[in-house]
Each structure stands twice: as C-alpha cells, then as structure tokens.
Length: 411
Figure 1 (spheres, rainbow, N blue to C red):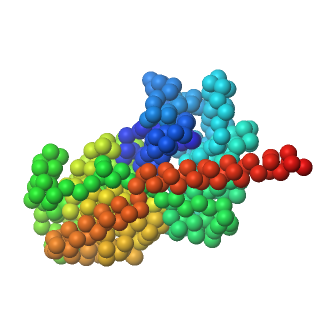
Figure 2 (figure 1 turned 90 degrees about the horizontal axis):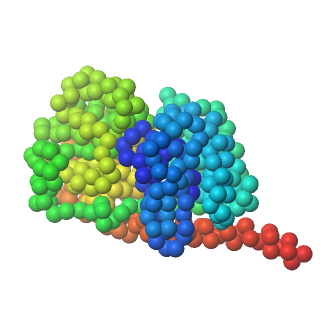
Figure 3 (figure 1 turned 180 degrees about the horizontal axis):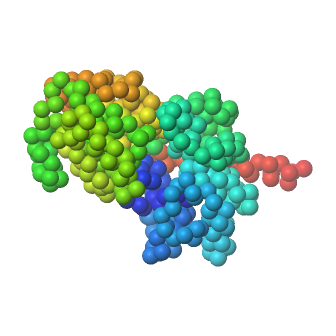
C-alpha cells in the first residue's frame, strides 16, 4: 500500500489527516489479520521516526526518504514522487521482497504506484479519496494545480481498478472522467463498531465531565480538517439562525498550526454573527478519544461542500448520534434523511438551524434517529466486511493479471 503524503499512524485532525488515514490503517490491520502480508509506504517527514514500524500483525509501516525529512506542503510533494518510488524499490530490493499487488491512496500515491506497477509488472488499484475536478465543481473558489488535475485524468485510465467509496463517486468517475463502470469497484469505508458504540443516556453526564464539557449544554459536534471546503463557516452562522440557541454549544475538533489562518477566519465569523460564546475550537484530538466526544454530543454536523465518503458521519452514527449533513458526495449515501439524521440540500445556515431546533426540541426523536443510525452501521459498515471486499478485489485483479501470461504460455 502507498500513502505517500500522510502516515496512517499520524494524529488525526491535522491539515493532511482524516478519514483516509483511518482507512489505510484499518484495512492494513484487517488484511493482516486475514493472513495477507501488508507493507504501507509513506514519505518520511520526521528524522526521528524508525524506518519500520508495526501497525498490526503482518502489517507494517515503512518510512521512505524522499525530499526533506520534515513537513512539506502537499502542493509541493509532486516533485518527490519519483524519488519516493525509487526509495520503495530500494527497500524492496534490500529486503528481497516480491510484491504481488499495489494499492495506492490519493493521487500522489497513485502516481508513484503507476511507476512501480510498471517496474514490477503487477496490478495496481487506487482509491483517490478526493478528486481535483470534483472539488472544483463542489466549490468554485477551490484551487487545484494543473499537475494534479492532469495526473488524475491520466491515472484513472492507467489503473487496473479505481476504488470508489460510494455509488455516487462511481457515477462521477463515469460522467467526468469517462472511466468504464467495469474498471470501478465500489467498496465503502467502515467503522470500528466496538470502538464507536452508544452508551446509555444516563451515562452521558459522566462522559462530559471526563471531557470537561458542560453537563447541561446542548452540544453540536463537528470533526475534521479545518479548511474552507468543510463548510464550518456555514455551521457557525447557523447558530445565529436558530430560534432557540440558549445553552447550545458548537464544539469543533481539528486543526494544527497550519490551520491558524482558517481558524482565525472562523473565529471572526463567530464574532460577526454574535455567537462567539457558543463556538469552541478544541484543536486536534487523538482518534482514540473521539468515541467519547461523539457520545457526549447531541448532534454531529457535517456541513462540507464535498465529501467522497464522510467517515465522521459514519463514526457518529455508529455511536448512536444523529447526523445533520450536507447532501453532497458520499454523505448522500451514508446518511438516510429522516431515518439516521437529516440531509441539507442547500449549503446555507437556515436549514441547518431548522434541524438543530427540531432535534433539540424533541429528545425522543433524537434518540430514535440515533438508534436507527446505529442499526444501519451494524448492517453494512464493519471494517472486517470492508476488508473482505478489498481482499476479493485483490483476488480478481491477480486472476486478471495472470490470464494474459497463461494465454501466452498456452500459445
């Protein structure tokens, strides 16, 4: 597996960390448990990190030297794709390993994987997680480099299989990039149903006390990278549009030192709309702490302009918490409107405010939606089931790859 720009073991909530990190870590762990040997390659950004780290039994993380051993802006990383691929090959040669298949994550990884797949003559699957052209359509003010756009347009046709998280993404790949349906595999992300699980309502006060949150507050929780595409400005403005915002608190988890300009912008918006006392920026939190934050919340909001899947929504629903989310991308598939929460068709504050008012005024409805959300997650979103689908895809790709060689040998 290749995760060039971000390590699956990195703390979540930073500028380059999120659902993709969880996906890579969990799939590597589950595949290892099923007997597949998995090496995950990432670019070294810290000189103190060991060259090889165990993720789980039969799954390990390898740091590859490519460019400076420090944080580099994602927009500048394409210059290191070829040195990265060379570093992976050097590790493979030194270890005497023959890899059977490459699974890349994000366009930078897929570009390096394309190089390696040609060198090794092995099948190559990739999950882009986000696509530049789709982001530009979702929000006109987004900026994407021509290098990224051109590379993605090439790679989607070079790969043996593109992995899409939802049927909606599969349709976009067909409509925008003209990728044949036969070369797209739809495999959702998953959730740890043991880690993210509901608690009895009466236990929530203890969780809030442990987290230092007010016990009598009505809490809206938002989690993710702090960037304009996440729509947090819309969410902050929605507080001012609520008919009753007494004892309502919006708690935002995410952000690192590089997110400071956006955090300052969001704080200014809160002041402009007079809700600064209701908005709390908690910074990044370790992934293992997130279940308690979900359990402490009354509602989880995902106001993004674009989400290829929406892992935060899935984790919230697994925790028995209703979700109010934008009707975009994968969120339209994971959140069932009126059953596990609500989907907002228009990216403006008032519809979010209306649903918050409704949920806070009706505790029975809130609990019913949360219970329904948990049942939905149990039906379709276990990581073990997702990993089984990934493993089945690998088997298909290996079989397809072997057929030309068999045909040639027979002739």
